[in-house]
Length: 467
Image (cartoon, rainbow, N blue to C red):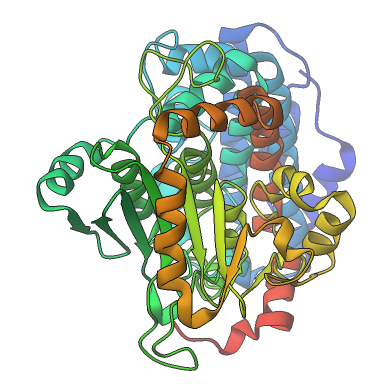
Protein backbone atom coordinates (compact mmCIF):
# COMPACT_ATOMS: atom_id res chain seq x y z
CA UNK A 1 0.00 0.00 0.00
CA UNK A 2 1.04 3.57 -0.68
CA UNK A 3 0.06 6.39 1.63
CA UNK A 4 -2.01 9.32 0.47
CA UNK A 5 -0.21 12.51 -0.49
CA UNK A 6 1.01 14.40 2.62
CA UNK A 7 -0.84 17.56 1.62
CA UNK A 8 -4.14 15.60 1.56
CA UNK A 9 -3.58 14.54 5.16
CA UNK A 10 -2.77 18.11 6.11
CA UNK A 11 -6.07 19.24 4.55
CA UNK A 12 -7.96 16.66 6.61
CA UNK A 13 -6.24 17.69 9.81
CA UNK A 14 -6.98 21.36 9.11
CA UNK A 15 -10.67 20.44 9.10
CA UNK A 16 -10.28 18.97 12.61
CA UNK A 17 -10.95 15.43 11.45
CA UNK A 18 -9.62 12.76 13.83
CA UNK A 19 -5.88 12.40 13.24
CA UNK A 20 -5.86 8.63 13.75
CA UNK A 21 -8.73 8.07 11.30
CA UNK A 22 -7.13 10.37 8.74
CA UNK A 23 -3.79 8.54 9.03
CA UNK A 24 -5.51 5.15 8.69
CA UNK A 25 -7.22 6.39 5.52
CA UNK A 26 -3.91 7.65 4.16
CA UNK A 27 -2.13 4.38 4.87
CA UNK A 28 -4.92 2.35 3.23
CA UNK A 29 -4.66 4.10 -0.14
CA UNK A 30 -3.79 1.43 -2.77
CA UNK A 31 -2.17 2.73 -5.93
CA UNK A 32 -1.28 -0.55 -7.60
CA UNK A 33 -3.15 -3.76 -8.35
CA UNK A 34 -2.65 -6.90 -6.27
CA UNK A 35 -5.10 -9.05 -8.21
CA UNK A 36 -8.86 -9.04 -8.56
CA UNK A 37 -10.04 -10.54 -5.26
CA UNK A 38 -7.40 -8.78 -3.19
CA UNK A 39 -8.18 -5.44 -4.81
CA UNK A 40 -11.90 -5.70 -4.05
CA UNK A 41 -10.98 -5.86 -0.37
CA UNK A 42 -8.10 -3.34 -0.43
CA UNK A 43 -9.87 -0.66 -2.39
CA UNK A 44 -13.11 -1.35 -0.54
CA UNK A 45 -11.38 -0.60 2.76
CA UNK A 46 -10.01 2.68 1.42
CA UNK A 47 -13.44 3.76 0.13
CA UNK A 48 -15.06 2.80 3.43
CA UNK A 49 -12.57 4.79 5.48
CA UNK A 50 -12.99 7.78 3.19
CA UNK A 51 -16.78 7.61 3.42
CA UNK A 52 -16.56 7.51 7.21
CA UNK A 53 -14.41 10.64 7.26
CA UNK A 54 -16.77 12.41 4.85
CA UNK A 55 -19.72 11.56 7.10
CA UNK A 56 -17.86 13.14 10.04
CA UNK A 57 -18.00 16.49 8.25
CA UNK A 58 -21.08 18.71 8.24
CA UNK A 59 -23.41 18.53 5.23
CA UNK A 60 -22.13 20.49 2.25
CA UNK A 61 -24.12 23.73 2.80
CA UNK A 62 -22.86 23.97 6.41
CA UNK A 63 -19.13 23.41 5.80
CA UNK A 64 -16.57 26.10 6.42
CA UNK A 65 -13.66 26.61 4.03
CA UNK A 66 -11.42 24.02 5.70
CA UNK A 67 -14.20 21.43 5.83
CA UNK A 68 -15.07 22.02 2.19
CA UNK A 69 -11.41 21.50 1.24
CA UNK A 70 -11.31 18.26 3.26
CA UNK A 71 -14.45 16.95 1.56
CA UNK A 72 -12.96 17.81 -1.83
CA UNK A 73 -9.72 15.97 -0.99
CA UNK A 74 -11.59 12.86 0.16
CA UNK A 75 -13.83 12.76 -2.89
CA UNK A 76 -10.99 13.41 -5.32
CA UNK A 77 -8.81 10.66 -3.84
CA UNK A 78 -11.67 8.17 -3.81
CA UNK A 79 -12.56 8.88 -7.42
CA UNK A 80 -8.94 8.58 -8.53
CA UNK A 81 -8.71 5.20 -6.82
CA UNK A 82 -11.90 4.01 -8.51
CA UNK A 83 -10.41 4.92 -11.87
CA UNK A 84 -7.35 2.78 -11.04
CA UNK A 85 -9.45 -0.11 -9.76
CA UNK A 86 -11.76 -0.11 -12.78
CA UNK A 87 -8.89 0.19 -15.24
CA UNK A 88 -7.87 -3.26 -14.04
CA UNK A 89 -11.18 -4.87 -13.16
CA UNK A 90 -14.17 -3.36 -15.00
CA UNK A 91 -14.59 -6.33 -17.34
CA UNK A 92 -14.38 -9.08 -14.68
CA UNK A 93 -16.91 -7.22 -12.54
CA UNK A 94 -19.29 -6.86 -15.49
CA UNK A 95 -18.90 -10.57 -16.21
CA UNK A 96 -19.82 -11.35 -12.58
CA UNK A 97 -22.81 -9.02 -12.54
CA UNK A 98 -24.21 -10.36 -15.81
CA UNK A 99 -23.34 -14.04 -15.27
CA UNK A 100 -20.91 -14.11 -18.14
CA UNK A 101 -23.01 -11.76 -20.26
CA UNK A 102 -25.98 -14.13 -20.20
CA UNK A 103 -28.05 -11.72 -18.11
CA UNK A 104 -29.13 -8.33 -19.44
CA UNK A 105 -29.13 -5.55 -16.85
CA UNK A 106 -30.24 -2.02 -17.67
CA UNK A 107 -27.63 0.47 -16.53
CA UNK A 108 -29.72 1.72 -13.60
CA UNK A 109 -29.91 -1.85 -12.28
CA UNK A 110 -26.26 -2.47 -13.07
CA UNK A 111 -24.83 0.41 -11.01
CA UNK A 112 -26.71 -0.68 -7.89
CA UNK A 113 -25.72 -4.30 -8.38
CA UNK A 114 -22.11 -3.07 -8.51
CA UNK A 115 -22.63 -1.25 -5.20
CA UNK A 116 -23.60 -4.53 -3.56
CA UNK A 117 -20.90 -6.58 -5.25
CA UNK A 118 -17.99 -4.21 -4.47
CA UNK A 119 -19.05 -1.92 -1.60
CA UNK A 120 -17.85 1.62 -2.15
CA UNK A 121 -17.38 1.27 -5.90
CA UNK A 122 -20.69 2.95 -6.68
CA UNK A 123 -23.21 4.54 -4.29
CA UNK A 124 -26.07 2.53 -2.81
CA UNK A 125 -29.71 3.39 -3.37
CA UNK A 126 -30.03 4.98 0.10
CA UNK A 127 -26.94 7.12 -0.56
CA UNK A 128 -28.35 8.37 -3.85
CA UNK A 129 -31.78 8.90 -2.30
CA UNK A 130 -30.26 10.99 0.49
CA UNK A 131 -28.65 13.33 -2.03
CA UNK A 132 -31.74 13.36 -4.25
CA UNK A 133 -33.58 15.26 -1.53
CA UNK A 134 -31.09 18.16 -1.80
CA UNK A 135 -30.74 20.99 -4.26
CA UNK A 136 -28.15 20.40 -6.96
CA UNK A 137 -25.56 22.75 -5.45
CA UNK A 138 -25.96 21.10 -2.03
CA UNK A 139 -24.89 17.66 -3.28
CA UNK A 140 -21.44 16.07 -2.97
CA UNK A 141 -22.05 14.23 -6.23
CA UNK A 142 -21.97 10.60 -5.14
CA UNK A 143 -23.49 9.79 -8.55
CA UNK A 144 -20.22 10.75 -10.24
CA UNK A 145 -19.01 7.30 -9.22
CA UNK A 146 -21.82 5.80 -11.30
CA UNK A 147 -20.55 7.74 -14.29
CA UNK A 148 -16.98 6.56 -13.71
CA UNK A 149 -18.11 2.93 -13.44
CA UNK A 150 -20.25 3.09 -16.59
CA UNK A 151 -17.47 4.84 -18.50
CA UNK A 152 -15.15 1.91 -17.84
CA UNK A 153 -17.80 -0.70 -18.66
CA UNK A 154 -18.59 1.03 -21.95
CA UNK A 155 -14.91 1.46 -22.80
CA UNK A 156 -14.50 -2.32 -23.26
CA UNK A 157 -15.97 -3.73 -26.49
CA UNK A 158 -17.53 -6.87 -24.99
CA UNK A 159 -19.04 -5.37 -21.86
CA UNK A 160 -19.88 -2.09 -23.58
CA UNK A 161 -21.69 -3.73 -26.47
CA UNK A 162 -23.58 -5.97 -24.08
CA UNK A 163 -24.73 -2.98 -22.01
CA UNK A 164 -25.80 -1.11 -25.15
CA UNK A 165 -27.70 -4.25 -26.18
CA UNK A 166 -29.43 -4.40 -22.78
CA UNK A 167 -30.55 -0.78 -23.10
CA UNK A 168 -31.99 -1.39 -26.58
CA UNK A 169 -34.25 -4.22 -25.41
CA UNK A 170 -37.89 -3.27 -24.85
CA UNK A 171 -38.62 -2.17 -21.30
CA UNK A 172 -40.36 -4.99 -19.34
CA UNK A 173 -43.49 -2.83 -19.03
CA UNK A 174 -43.75 -2.35 -22.79
CA UNK A 175 -45.09 -5.81 -23.72
CA UNK A 176 -48.48 -5.28 -22.06
CA UNK A 177 -48.75 -1.82 -23.63
CA UNK A 178 -48.03 -3.25 -27.10
CA UNK A 179 -51.08 -5.51 -26.77
CA UNK A 180 -53.21 -2.65 -25.47
CA UNK A 181 -52.23 -0.42 -28.38
CA UNK A 182 -52.80 -3.21 -30.89
CA UNK A 183 -56.40 -3.62 -29.73
CA UNK A 184 -57.32 0.04 -29.21
CA UNK A 185 -55.13 1.93 -31.67
CA UNK A 186 -54.47 4.52 -28.96
CA UNK A 187 -52.46 4.66 -25.75
CA UNK A 188 -52.27 7.43 -23.16
CA UNK A 189 -49.24 7.22 -20.86
CA UNK A 190 -49.59 10.69 -19.41
CA UNK A 191 -46.27 12.14 -20.53
CA UNK A 192 -46.62 10.52 -23.95
CA UNK A 193 -49.60 9.61 -26.08
CA UNK A 194 -49.83 7.26 -29.06
CA UNK A 195 -52.42 7.14 -31.81
CA UNK A 196 -52.51 5.15 -35.04
CA UNK A 197 -53.30 7.30 -38.06
CA UNK A 198 -53.42 5.36 -41.30
CA UNK A 199 -50.01 3.86 -41.98
CA UNK A 200 -48.38 5.89 -39.19
CA UNK A 201 -48.26 5.74 -35.42
CA UNK A 202 -47.99 9.23 -33.92
CA UNK A 203 -46.21 9.81 -30.61
CA UNK A 204 -47.06 13.06 -28.85
CA UNK A 205 -44.70 14.49 -26.25
CA UNK A 206 -46.74 15.92 -23.36
CA UNK A 207 -45.44 18.19 -20.59
CA UNK A 208 -47.30 21.44 -21.34
CA UNK A 209 -46.51 23.26 -18.11
CA UNK A 210 -42.83 23.16 -19.03
CA UNK A 211 -43.26 23.62 -22.81
CA UNK A 212 -43.04 19.84 -23.31
CA UNK A 213 -39.62 19.69 -21.63
CA UNK A 214 -38.15 16.37 -20.50
CA UNK A 215 -37.55 15.47 -16.85
CA UNK A 216 -37.55 12.52 -14.49
CA UNK A 217 -41.36 12.28 -14.70
CA UNK A 218 -41.40 11.88 -18.51
CA UNK A 219 -38.49 9.57 -19.30
CA UNK A 220 -39.97 6.14 -18.54
CA UNK A 221 -43.23 6.88 -20.35
CA UNK A 222 -41.44 8.25 -23.40
CA UNK A 223 -39.32 5.11 -23.73
CA UNK A 224 -42.36 2.85 -23.36
CA UNK A 225 -44.11 4.88 -26.06
CA UNK A 226 -41.11 4.53 -28.38
CA UNK A 227 -41.03 0.76 -27.75
CA UNK A 228 -44.73 0.43 -28.56
CA UNK A 229 -44.48 2.63 -31.67
CA UNK A 230 -41.63 0.54 -33.05
CA UNK A 231 -43.18 -2.82 -32.17
CA UNK A 232 -46.64 -1.98 -33.52
CA UNK A 233 -47.23 -4.28 -36.48
CA UNK A 234 -50.11 -2.32 -37.96
CA UNK A 235 -48.09 0.76 -38.87
CA UNK A 236 -45.18 1.31 -41.23
CA UNK A 237 -43.75 4.57 -39.96
CA UNK A 238 -43.63 6.53 -36.68
CA UNK A 239 -44.09 10.25 -36.10
CA UNK A 240 -42.90 12.29 -33.11
CA UNK A 241 -44.62 15.59 -32.42
CA UNK A 242 -45.10 17.89 -29.45
CA UNK A 243 -48.55 18.32 -27.91
CA UNK A 244 -50.54 21.54 -27.76
CA UNK A 245 -49.65 23.85 -24.88
CA UNK A 246 -52.75 24.99 -23.03
CA UNK A 247 -51.58 28.16 -21.28
CA UNK A 248 -49.04 30.97 -21.31
CA UNK A 249 -47.32 32.63 -24.27
CA UNK A 250 -47.75 29.59 -26.53
CA UNK A 251 -51.33 28.75 -25.55
CA UNK A 252 -53.08 26.80 -28.29
CA UNK A 253 -49.86 26.00 -30.18
CA UNK A 254 -47.99 22.78 -30.60
CA UNK A 255 -44.40 22.86 -29.37
CA UNK A 256 -41.94 20.13 -30.28
CA UNK A 257 -40.03 20.54 -27.02
CA UNK A 258 -37.91 22.75 -24.77
CA UNK A 259 -35.23 20.16 -23.94
CA UNK A 260 -34.35 19.26 -20.37
CA UNK A 261 -36.44 20.80 -17.59
CA UNK A 262 -33.91 23.36 -16.34
CA UNK A 263 -35.92 24.20 -13.24
CA UNK A 264 -35.80 20.57 -12.16
CA UNK A 265 -32.12 20.38 -13.07
CA UNK A 266 -31.31 23.35 -10.84
CA UNK A 267 -33.36 21.98 -7.95
CA UNK A 268 -31.58 18.62 -8.05
CA UNK A 269 -34.49 16.64 -9.45
CA UNK A 270 -32.64 15.27 -12.49
CA UNK A 271 -30.37 12.34 -11.50
CA UNK A 272 -27.19 11.64 -13.46
CA UNK A 273 -28.58 8.32 -14.70
CA UNK A 274 -31.40 10.24 -16.38
CA UNK A 275 -29.00 11.42 -19.10
CA UNK A 276 -27.60 7.95 -19.74
CA UNK A 277 -30.93 6.12 -19.61
CA UNK A 278 -32.30 8.66 -22.07
CA UNK A 279 -29.47 8.51 -24.61
CA UNK A 280 -28.77 4.78 -24.42
CA UNK A 281 -32.50 4.11 -24.20
CA UNK A 282 -35.24 5.78 -26.19
CA UNK A 283 -33.02 8.16 -28.21
CA UNK A 284 -30.81 5.27 -29.31
CA UNK A 285 -33.96 3.28 -30.18
CA UNK A 286 -35.06 6.08 -32.51
CA UNK A 287 -31.79 5.59 -34.38
CA UNK A 288 -31.27 1.82 -34.19
CA UNK A 289 -34.61 0.26 -33.26
CA UNK A 290 -35.53 -2.21 -30.53
CA UNK A 291 -33.11 -5.08 -30.02
CA UNK A 292 -33.84 -8.81 -29.77
CA UNK A 293 -32.20 -10.75 -26.92
CA UNK A 294 -30.35 -13.16 -29.21
CA UNK A 295 -29.11 -10.69 -31.81
CA UNK A 296 -26.38 -8.11 -31.31
CA UNK A 297 -27.76 -4.83 -32.69
CA UNK A 298 -24.60 -3.94 -34.62
CA UNK A 299 -26.18 -3.98 -38.14
CA UNK A 300 -23.55 -6.42 -39.43
CA UNK A 301 -23.90 -9.53 -37.27
CA UNK A 302 -27.42 -8.95 -36.04
CA UNK A 303 -30.47 -6.76 -36.26
CA UNK A 304 -33.48 -5.73 -34.27
CA UNK A 305 -36.95 -4.40 -35.02
CA UNK A 306 -37.07 -0.86 -36.33
CA UNK A 307 -39.25 1.66 -38.07
CA UNK A 308 -38.52 4.89 -39.94
CA UNK A 309 -39.19 8.03 -37.89
CA UNK A 310 -40.52 11.44 -38.87
CA UNK A 311 -40.23 14.48 -36.60
CA UNK A 312 -42.81 17.25 -36.99
CA UNK A 313 -41.27 20.38 -35.46
CA UNK A 314 -43.64 23.11 -34.33
CA UNK A 315 -42.34 26.35 -32.72
CA UNK A 316 -38.94 25.09 -31.57
CA UNK A 317 -36.76 22.10 -30.76
CA UNK A 318 -34.39 23.10 -27.97
CA UNK A 319 -31.61 21.04 -26.41
CA UNK A 320 -32.61 17.39 -26.10
CA UNK A 321 -35.44 17.80 -28.57
CA UNK A 322 -32.99 19.14 -31.14
CA UNK A 323 -30.79 16.14 -30.35
CA UNK A 324 -33.68 13.80 -31.18
CA UNK A 325 -33.94 15.29 -34.68
CA UNK A 326 -30.46 13.96 -35.43
CA UNK A 327 -31.85 10.40 -35.15
CA UNK A 328 -34.80 10.96 -37.47
CA UNK A 329 -35.23 9.77 -41.05
CA UNK A 330 -37.20 12.85 -42.04
CA UNK A 331 -37.75 16.22 -40.36
CA UNK A 332 -40.73 18.37 -41.27
CA UNK A 333 -40.60 21.83 -39.69
CA UNK A 334 -42.90 24.81 -39.47
CA UNK A 335 -41.51 27.86 -41.28
CA UNK A 336 -41.38 29.91 -38.06
CA UNK A 337 -39.66 27.22 -35.97
CA UNK A 338 -36.04 27.13 -34.82
CA UNK A 339 -33.41 24.82 -33.30
CA UNK A 340 -30.92 25.47 -30.51
CA UNK A 341 -28.44 23.47 -28.42
CA UNK A 342 -27.81 25.80 -25.45
CA UNK A 343 -25.38 23.46 -23.71
CA UNK A 344 -22.89 26.22 -22.91
CA UNK A 345 -25.57 28.21 -21.11
CA UNK A 346 -26.43 25.12 -19.07
CA UNK A 347 -22.97 23.72 -18.42
CA UNK A 348 -23.69 20.19 -19.65
CA UNK A 349 -22.94 18.04 -22.72
CA UNK A 350 -25.85 17.99 -25.22
CA UNK A 351 -26.26 14.23 -25.34
CA UNK A 352 -24.88 12.70 -28.53
CA UNK A 353 -25.15 15.93 -30.52
CA UNK A 354 -21.37 16.35 -30.48
CA UNK A 355 -21.12 13.03 -32.33
CA UNK A 356 -24.07 13.49 -34.71
CA UNK A 357 -24.46 17.17 -35.51
CA UNK A 358 -21.21 17.58 -37.52
CA UNK A 359 -22.39 15.08 -40.13
CA UNK A 360 -25.44 17.28 -40.76
CA UNK A 361 -24.07 20.81 -40.69
CA UNK A 362 -20.27 20.38 -40.65
CA UNK A 363 -17.81 20.80 -37.81
CA UNK A 364 -17.74 24.61 -37.62
CA UNK A 365 -21.49 25.17 -37.43
CA UNK A 366 -21.79 22.25 -34.99
CA UNK A 367 -19.22 23.83 -32.67
CA UNK A 368 -20.94 27.20 -32.96
CA UNK A 369 -24.29 25.63 -32.08
CA UNK A 370 -22.95 23.70 -29.07
CA UNK A 371 -20.31 26.09 -27.73
CA UNK A 372 -21.49 29.51 -28.88
CA UNK A 373 -25.28 29.23 -28.76
CA UNK A 374 -25.86 29.62 -32.49
CA UNK A 375 -29.56 29.48 -33.27
CA UNK A 376 -30.57 27.67 -36.45
CA UNK A 377 -33.84 28.88 -37.94
CA UNK A 378 -35.46 25.91 -39.61
CA UNK A 379 -36.24 27.91 -42.74
CA UNK A 380 -32.61 28.94 -43.35
CA UNK A 381 -29.77 27.39 -45.37
CA UNK A 382 -28.24 25.97 -42.15
CA UNK A 383 -31.58 24.84 -40.76
CA UNK A 384 -32.39 23.02 -43.97
CA UNK A 385 -29.30 20.86 -43.46
CA UNK A 386 -31.28 19.26 -40.61
CA UNK A 387 -34.87 19.84 -41.77
CA UNK A 388 -35.98 18.04 -44.93
CA UNK A 389 -39.12 20.07 -45.61
CA UNK A 390 -40.49 23.40 -44.44
CA UNK A 391 -44.23 24.11 -44.29
CA UNK A 392 -46.26 27.14 -43.22
CA UNK A 393 -47.13 26.78 -39.53
CA UNK A 394 -50.86 26.72 -40.28
CA UNK A 395 -50.42 23.90 -42.80
CA UNK A 396 -48.36 21.45 -40.75
CA UNK A 397 -51.14 18.85 -40.40
CA UNK A 398 -51.67 18.60 -44.15
CA UNK A 399 -47.94 18.62 -44.86
CA UNK A 400 -47.39 15.82 -42.34
CA UNK A 401 -50.08 13.68 -43.96
CA UNK A 402 -48.42 14.15 -47.37
CA UNK A 403 -44.97 13.24 -45.97
CA UNK A 404 -46.33 10.06 -44.36
CA UNK A 405 -48.00 9.04 -47.60
CA UNK A 406 -44.90 9.78 -49.65
CA UNK A 407 -42.54 7.87 -47.37
CA UNK A 408 -44.76 4.79 -47.10
CA UNK A 409 -45.79 4.49 -50.75
CA UNK A 410 -42.81 2.22 -51.57
CA UNK A 411 -43.21 -0.01 -48.49
CA UNK A 412 -41.20 -0.31 -45.30
CA UNK A 413 -38.65 -2.96 -46.30
CA UNK A 414 -36.40 -0.79 -48.44
CA UNK A 415 -36.73 2.14 -46.01
CA UNK A 416 -35.43 0.03 -43.14
CA UNK A 417 -32.70 -1.49 -45.28
CA UNK A 418 -31.52 1.95 -46.30
CA UNK A 419 -31.55 3.11 -42.68
CA UNK A 420 -29.19 0.30 -41.77
CA UNK A 421 -26.95 0.96 -44.74
CA UNK A 422 -26.57 4.64 -43.83
CA UNK A 423 -26.08 3.81 -40.15
CA UNK A 424 -23.29 1.28 -40.56
CA UNK A 425 -21.17 3.92 -42.25
CA UNK A 426 -22.13 6.86 -40.08
CA UNK A 427 -22.63 5.53 -36.55
CA UNK A 428 -21.79 1.85 -36.10
CA UNK A 429 -22.44 0.41 -32.66
CA UNK A 430 -18.76 0.47 -31.77
CA UNK A 431 -18.56 4.22 -32.40
CA UNK A 432 -21.71 4.76 -30.35
CA UNK A 433 -20.24 2.69 -27.49
CA UNK A 434 -16.97 4.63 -27.39
CA UNK A 435 -18.76 7.97 -27.41
CA UNK A 436 -21.05 6.73 -24.62
CA UNK A 437 -17.99 5.90 -22.51
CA UNK A 438 -16.68 9.45 -22.80
CA UNK A 439 -20.14 10.88 -22.26
CA UNK A 440 -20.76 8.89 -19.06
CA UNK A 441 -17.70 10.31 -17.31
CA UNK A 442 -17.73 13.85 -18.68
CA UNK A 443 -21.44 14.41 -18.14
CA UNK A 444 -21.05 13.18 -14.54
CA UNK A 445 -18.51 15.89 -13.74
CA UNK A 446 -20.50 18.54 -15.63
CA UNK A 447 -23.68 17.59 -13.79
CA UNK A 448 -22.12 18.31 -10.40
CA UNK A 449 -19.93 21.23 -11.38
CA UNK A 450 -20.38 24.61 -9.63
CA UNK A 451 -20.40 26.05 -13.16
CA UNK A 452 -23.74 24.31 -13.80
CA UNK A 453 -25.38 26.23 -10.96
CA UNK A 454 -23.74 29.51 -11.95
CA UNK A 455 -24.84 29.10 -15.57
CA UNK A 456 -28.44 28.31 -14.64
CA UNK A 457 -28.64 31.25 -12.27
CA UNK A 458 -27.12 33.64 -14.79
CA UNK A 459 -28.86 32.47 -17.95
CA UNK A 460 -32.07 30.92 -16.66
CA UNK A 461 -32.67 33.00 -13.50
CA UNK A 462 -33.12 29.62 -11.89
CA UNK A 463 -33.06 30.89 -8.32
CA UNK A 464 -36.42 32.57 -8.89
CA UNK A 465 -38.13 29.71 -10.73
CA UNK A 466 -40.84 27.62 -9.12
CA UNK A 467 -41.69 23.97 -9.67
